[in-house]
Amino acid sequence: GTEMVAFLAGLVPGVACLLLSYVTGESIGRGDGLVLCILGLLCGMKATLAVFGLALTFSAIWAIFLLILRRAGRKTELPFLPCLSLGYLVYALV
Image (cartoon, rainbow, N blue to C red; front, side):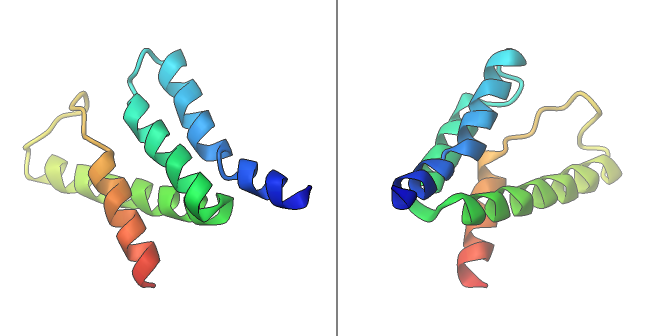
């Protein structure tokens, strides 16, 4: 009962990312959504949201750093999976 609901709730962030990928024509990668789905199934919704928040923070820091160095512009696409990996690493170590 409640265990199954908690198990499936972990899929919510990943499924939301997959839907955004579909709606935006893959401006947000489908692989990011799949990784979030797997992470949600393994770790649960709370951990997945924490890792996603950390990944967004790391991505923003990386983007600002690249903008300051003039290595990227406003339209530059950045991969998100390395930030997800770093977010998971930080979450797991803290």
